[in-house]
Image (tube, rainbow, N blue to C red; front, side, top):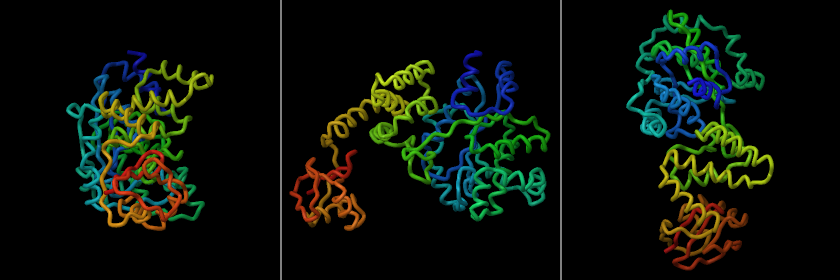
Length: 390
């Protein structure tokens, strides 16, 4: 029991507000209400967001009540906690479309039948100016602009809208509405999470404990973010998920094992020693990570299929069986790349050829005047974006 609690409070965690208090609550055996809010700013939940979701699963496995707040209201307003520029407001239609499969995606990690699910428009839509003013009175402008990303934007002369000041109030009031005992969020959410504690005191509730999880890097080395397109998404097809993991930098292997899987800590420590000793090729350990992550979301069968595809198509550069067929009216390589949607323009097609990114039947093509034979297979990039030409 104590070891499990230590794992919950330490693994993937960068800070706990009132650590000892929360540890004693967990030891008491009392069922706690554990809150996570997710804004549907994108249709996909990526592995960066899986970190707090996995932490929710840890709490759920211990018998605590998981409360998932879908930010259909806050998602439209926009949180800029992790942004270096103002996030644009989304329309209600965009938010509605984005959150269509959110519950399904969360169900890849959580037992959905056992959790509470709320949409924060239930309580935020009905607030009056008087109530919002009461909440805003709890915080000063100085506290808001001390936030690192806000301070940077101010120093850079970038615009900060008054709308952005309201977001922490809304997230804080979510905690009041669902009476959370613990809120989980990324470390970039610190101000918003603390706002929940302040707000709960105002409404005569015991302030929630806070557990902040680590942020993970995306495939380009920046923070994983849908805005930057550097994500591994929960609903990525198995072969794409597997391939993306295998494409990540070696230094990201261990952080991903710690934060995005539940591989035993001792096993991860062993992998770290093997990498440090240079006795093992990091690619072999990365392969274990790709297997584990793909299996988590697509079962052992999906993982096996993805690994087979990776070994044959990526590693051995074979042509897969399920290549999309494209009928064209010109067999010039530039025309074919555009007609098959492998390039969005003839200029881009010529650039790809010049860079050596185009193959015909596994042979690299460097001539923009190359004529393709009917029945040939074209490949864009080493990782294999294929078309069969008819």
